[in-house]
Image (cartoon, rainbow, N blue to C red):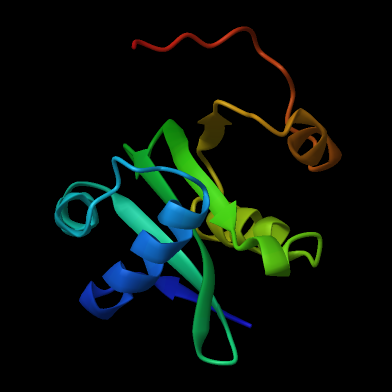
Length: 121
């Protein structure tokens, strides 16, 4: 297992993971732009990108996770937790916030529910 900053050659892998999740708005071009405008960390197993997290941060107060996803065949093996642990190590003094569709996962990692999220459209 190896965790690192995403680079241009990871765009196709990130695209494929997003497509597996049904995120049809994630085009190659959009991911290229996201690599410039946000932070993306990938996790590799046997030289294959099997997950990633994308986030925004001011590096002082808040880090906001926009996506955290691991391929279905690699889930429940600790890889998503490894991505969170990596963020905690890299940004030890900022709070991490996110919108969750998997509350039990984050609660196991001691995240606390702080309210309700909203989205348009």
